[in-house]
Length: 126
Image 1: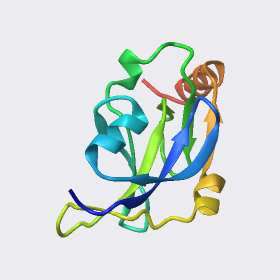
Image 2: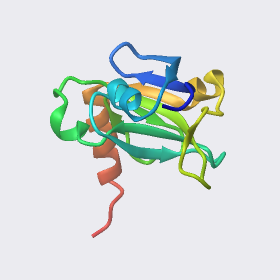
Image 3: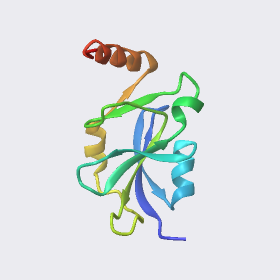
Image 4: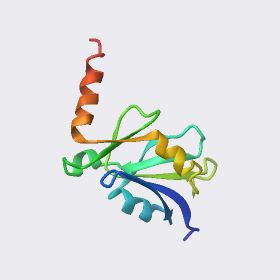
């Protein structure tokens, strides 16, 4: 097993963002409550947000959501920010500061997600 890495948990239920220790895939899956998938890449080339890849289909309807500055779509459920070494694919310490991440995340409820979707559909052209 590798070394414990610095990760950041985005908790949509408690609407908190906290640093956590992460020791690989099992910890990441535990944080998001299922199989992980990459949801968003940060501009620093290292950090990414992992979410439950089946969360839209498997999480209860009243599960909270969050959106990150620079991402087009909101994410349902919890997220975990981890770093990834592009050369090896290994998980490494998250580089983004807790304060910087907090400034980029906005928590949403179910109604706000629908409002966002309606606003976007008004701009679509056929």
